[in-house]
Length: 262
Figure 1: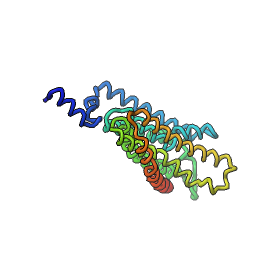
Figure 2 (figure 1 turned 135 degrees about the vertical axis):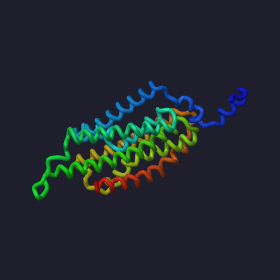
Figure 3 (figure 1 turned 90 degrees about the vertical axis):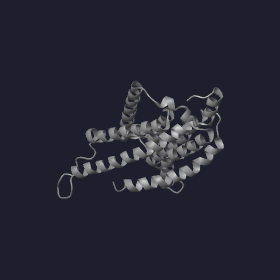
Figure 4 (figure 1 turned 30 degrees about the vertical axis):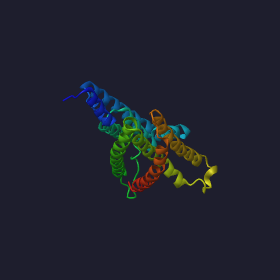
């Protein structure tokens, strides 16, 4: 089964980094347990912090939301998780699990703590609670589905950045950076500050700064991950950013259209 040392070395050179590392993908039961506990804890913390950002008033709530409560923050969590976990399948699976747990915790807190769905009345005087619950259920189902898509894609991209060759890693980083920045770019395009008369409004300016910050943070995080590799392909990374961001903006336009009817 094993050849000469020269044959073994030559096979290792032509195999991908993920294939070379495949024995490390086999975890012991203890390691599986640790990964599960960390995923549950991180997902619960992310969901709770996102909920906190919704509930806190003023600048404190805006700051928490920017760091933990938007598409950039959750996408970055999935990307970094994929980067830290060895093996493409495990990276995608763990990142998806993280987002699913976060989404479940977030909506459980809405149901139990804030109860923002309850308390209203319809025109005929009947309780609005059943419709409110239905709205929460539709939103939860949508974002659980989005968590699966985002977790699989960004978890895999994070793993590619770490484990694949320089060119493929740079492409993956550019795609990831564009996707993470897309929500902020989409929102800035919708707000159109270059045309708006609301630049004197504090709330408008806060929102503008918040989403501009997510774009900068997205590029900064992915650039940091790329900088940890040797060698680097900065030109490939830069060329992959723009088309990915453009596609991501279109995707967020579709997401907003769905959210409007939930």
